[in-house]
Image (cartoon, rainbow, N blue to C red):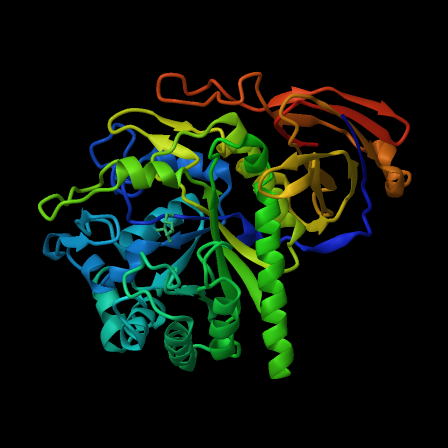
Length: 500
Ligand code: AHR
């Protein structure tokens, strides 16, 4: 196959918000316990956090971390997770059919975030709770002192407020699996009341109203329209969540970005239509605060815990092993997010450690990188500045799910401060490389002075993965770049994700 891309510095989509490179830690499975936190581990620090995991999270380049859920948050009482540890209650977590010990809570998590250098994005429970508890938590985290909850925080050891800037108004309230699942009407009203109350304390908070749990929810579209009709004036973001898995149709799976693109365009159109109807001058952006590859079918059929006498602590849940083709799709999802950098100004890779995660750990043992670690780390490190739309000419292939899909998808970024362009490209061909020509003519004289490197994630075995036994099996490798005047020639391997 052949493809051609013209890099145009003037084709700006928008500034890449650093929050696009966020992630997510939920009290679910071994994300917290035996994941980031394992006091008995040889690499644990004085607070019980694994320093090997901290180093990997830093290398991954995670800017924000959404916490503490996810489905978990819809039954969570935040008060359980603060104060003297020995007094914290054990609770049943109905979302994941587990026991939550509350050994790690808000203070401990913030301590961990300070070590990894990421910002907290906090979710309030609008499943089993409401306005009052959200306000209590806000006072606890953000008020300086001199009130009941802020003084409680100070007594619990944190003089300075957490000063959380970004808040999620519940989680996936459109999902029948959610504790407190509501209609768009019910949830929209509750979210509006909660948002208005929170903004009476601080009008500068950034609030995220729940959008749809996937573009295939039966309420998709109407959910966004109704919830935004209630909350438009009081929130800054609407969320999108999307997970993809290979259900035995690799061609459609490789084209997952097509669905993500449709999802984003539809939510933008809906938000802008509510804006027009209201005659508002304000624009609502997207917080794509859960996205990843997730073998949800395996969870539903194998992992799911049941039984009224069976509530394990930190069970192995959602511990998917990611292959090279998973990582290629994952990289293409990052490309899709960047292509919408003007409207997707926050995103969270769900999740971060052990639970559908780029980082895996064994208790008492090693931590290692999954295949998906590499596209995220590279894009977060270099995909900064301004996102640039690129003109791609390539062939297409037929998919069962999406019809004809371009073989190559791509986006670029220009980081003026760093003097760097980054081009991200995915080759969806299952069996053939693509000869890619990148035209830098629009860069003028600058083109000649650029140092060019290319690195790809691909493998003769697209099912190859990193595992505990073989943690270094997959890593990106350099691709040869041939230069010819202002043209670059690169051969993109079959099923590959490439950074140039
Ligand atoms: O990330 C796993 C789960 O996926 C989250 O708890 C939930 O919000 C979504 O359904």
